[in-house]
Amino acid sequence: MSDQIVTPVGRVLWSDLTQPDDYGKYTLKVGFDKDADLSTIEEAIQAEVDKKFNGKVTAKHRMPIIDGNTEVDDNGNVYESSKDMRIIRFKTKHKPMVCGPGGHDDVRAVEDIYSGCYVRVISKFYAYNNVSKGVSSQLESLQLYKHGERLGGSSGKKVDVATAFSEVEDADTSWP
Image 1 (cartoon, one colour):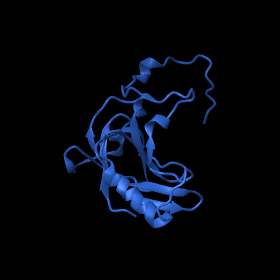
Image 2 (cartoon, one colour):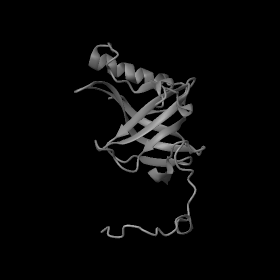
Image 3 (cartoon, helix red, strand yellow):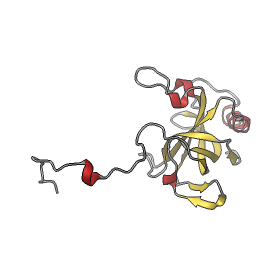
């Protein structure tokens, strides 16, 4: 496993940090500008490839940095949020620590991280060879760098459900 690496600032494209997935992992997907300096990350990945796979990678190997232009919707259109980006998916088995722009004295909740905000990530990279082969990125902690416009989904605005929903005339009220 590589040493801890701090990424440059990237934009959160997907955040699933409040609850683990079916495999017990928390996931964060971050997009970096194509010009961002990811050389330290690339070197750590190559070192893992050299150790585990004798420096040889095939198309079947799963790698942590992907081309954002391969992220497409059902119609084959590249998502605007990932266009011309390099994307890294970070995973962890433990809920990560989140700090704010003030650094380690500015602890935040994982709920403060959303698709569209900007973060820096501390991670380690490791090679695996089990059912599949590749290199993965282990999320250690992250820093909310700055807020950004939310991507897709909810606008984040609170809805007054008392006035938004009216009573349903023929509702099935036999639910437990």
